Length: 357
Image 1: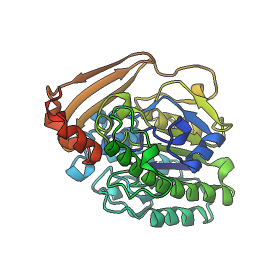
Image 2: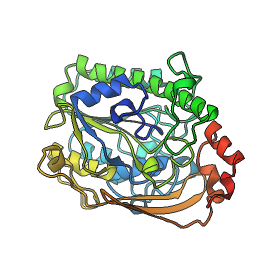
Image 3: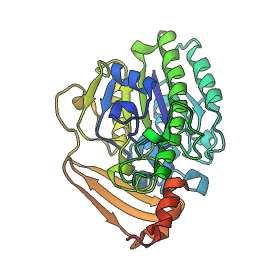
Image 4: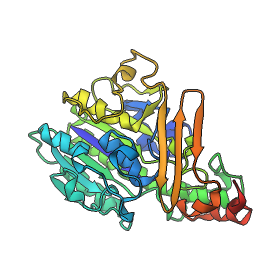
């Protein structure tokens, strides 16, 4: 069985990657699985990121140049992983947000529940319950289950007692101010809600005796929804959490430092499932890395941005030591709308962000 569980915007800001963002269930998954410490999206915007992962192609190759809710769709929906697995005998199910296509019925899922491309459904508890109910059923054939959450997308919830802004450090690109500390506290509240729901799904896998023959892939689309992060080709935008737990070496609490791209997941899944890898795949199987046979499977990884809320063309290539980013817009002011509004962005705008090159 295969579970792809994903959410919006946490980047690498979760506890297993060393940040003071309490996510005990994600941490527990890492302790029992494999943590990829140098994992990157191929496109640090919402729909293109998911498209790259689920087609095994760069965004310009699969055609997902921008957001699904703004009319950008896959060039060929049959390249979606669900179609390939369905053709190999898998039952396919989608719970929660897919944020990939305006018509999710084309994506290859047998069962569709709450599949809006927009972000108007933050009911994580209902989404989780659907997934838990599915896991509790009798499964006579392998399944591929996608579970999508809106957390930690803005708008963030109010911080609770566990998130005290006085003791919150803002993300690395941002100045340390009361406004950015409060903003980070609100992010941590959203991460807490996310983690609680992920924990329920992980617990259901264990409780139903599925852990030994289920590969869980827990990841996200791109960096935090703060300025200088989401929608940028820096590591702050491209860096993502990626934790995989299951048999065939995906256990034991290993932390791997080799660079991986999310487009590498499709060929990895094909190898694990014994399926011939489709000819369009652009990534590499991670199995040599997981088995400890090599230190790297990629000499470089690539990233791109085309559209989000505006045209923001960027290309990036990253080696273990260097990153080259090419911007095709002269000034940041043309793309300020690309990062969700929040206290951190408002602070920077009030202090000259529009004039920054």
